[in-house]
Image (cartoon, rainbow, N blue to C red; front, top):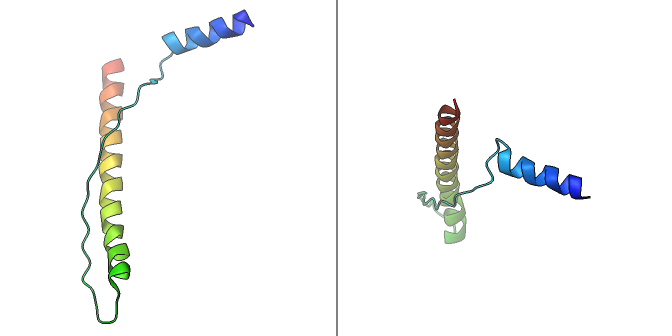
Length: 75
């Protein structure tokens, strides 16, 4: 049991993978023009779609940029 624990601790200390995470708040906006007969709830849900899309794109861009930065630093 001690050997397994020692291997696990060594892998955590000397491994190449990063175990640190950063929390980042992303704020995005979306707009939707209501048509006749639509409720505010429907308009809000449709305005959320572009906001979510923008937020996901921001996260992906951040992740790729950070990954490239880290890989460049390791070389």
